[in-house]
Amino acid sequence: MWVERLQLGEFRRFQNAGIEPAPGLNLITGRNGAGKTSVLEALHVMAYGRSFRGRVRDGLIRDGKEAIEVFVQWRESRQPVSDSACADDAEGADASISRKAGIRHTGQAWTGKLDGMPVTHLGELCAALAVVTFEPGSHALVNGGGEPRRRFLDWGLFHVEQDFLSLSRRYARALKQRNALLKSGAGASMLDVWDRELAEAGEPLTRRRQVYVERIQTRAVALAATLAPSLGLRDMDFVPGWRRHEMSLADALLLARDRDRQMGHTSVGPHRADWNVGFQVIPGRDALSRGQAKLTALACLMAQAEDCALQRGDWPVIALDDLASELDREHQQRVLAWLCAHPAQVFVTATELPQSMLEMEREGQLQVFHVEHGSVDRR
Image 1: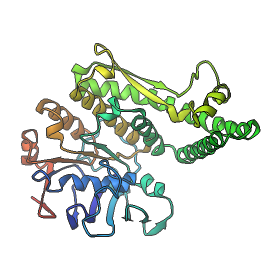
Image 2: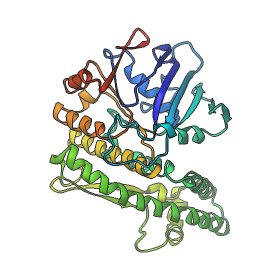
Image 3: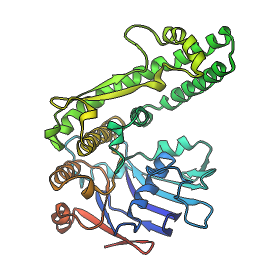
Image 4: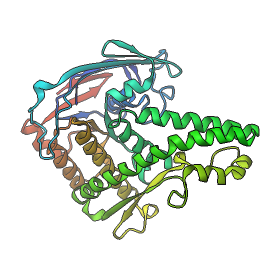
């Protein structure tokens, strides 16, 4: 899939601005604070319902205005994707279809449309446009808490398995009910009902996450060897959230019930799941430098994008914020070479045209935009 038009209104510095990017590699330049990252944020809001820098109400709305507005028009093909396809390969383009979506968000409430029809669930918008984002905070995927790693798994499943969202929502509803009962001191019979519901949703949810990690692991290890061979990424280990090799989730919930009553919340289950990365030499993720954590996260995110493409038959949009400051020149060149060998639309932000992209611009492989004074202009 590739974005044909992105429009944003009352979004940080932008009163009203738009961009019509190329299907391949797009560079957005501008001085620090000019708003180049906001262009990627707008894409992220449409694809995730929030910015990668926080919630809509946390500074996204332009001063004195009521809401942000984002409109995206894109094309998607759902054609089989070849590992060896090039970024400028137009094969299958005639089979693509045009789609569009818009959202207005006040920070408290939102309204949206998808292909001209109103949507009632934010998930409908998020399911339509797939965007994989690498940004300065992405190292938290590796050395942060478990929540971003669970989101990573669920994003991948959400975009390739149509019924995963309903399964995830079923588990979340059951978890909320069980926690409320634990806090209220409800009797065993009521807890039995929600333990059963949690187990019936949680077991298949966990199986899907396990399979997904095993699938991503193969690609991430291979990608790390290409993008950052010095890392020595060895494997990804899934942690289900309870001692799954010893007991079922139903048994684990029953065993933990007295402790959960004391704490007032459910201590075992898929909501406590996680995954770890293993390395050939580095002892573990706690021993990673910030740069190593970023490279590991990048390998995982690009593996996710590649898996999404092969499962759906259509590449997600890839957004790389401030790539030049996040990676040294050697790693930038490796990343760009890998991206140019695949038919993904890519957005990169930078304060100026990086040395690694000069030749690409001369050969017409790169579209450059410049952000200044609240506008985005094609160079």
